[in-house]
Amino acid sequence: MVNLIWTAVVILVILWALGFAVNVGGGLIHLLLVLALIGLVYNLLTGRRVL
Image (cartoon, rainbow, N blue to C red; front, side, top):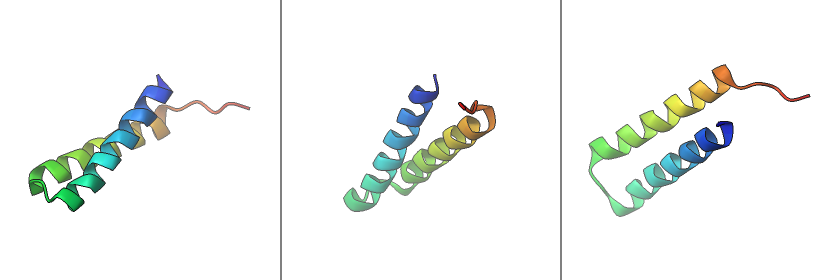
């Protein structure tokens, strides 16, 4: 599950960065960034540390 969240975060950040290069609509870019940040914060708050 953790790998799936990190994969989604990475994909969303890449799409967000690609949106600047391709000049896609501004609302979509910010939506992708917010989704990536929510995924990252969720993973940091619920992640378990492996010793």
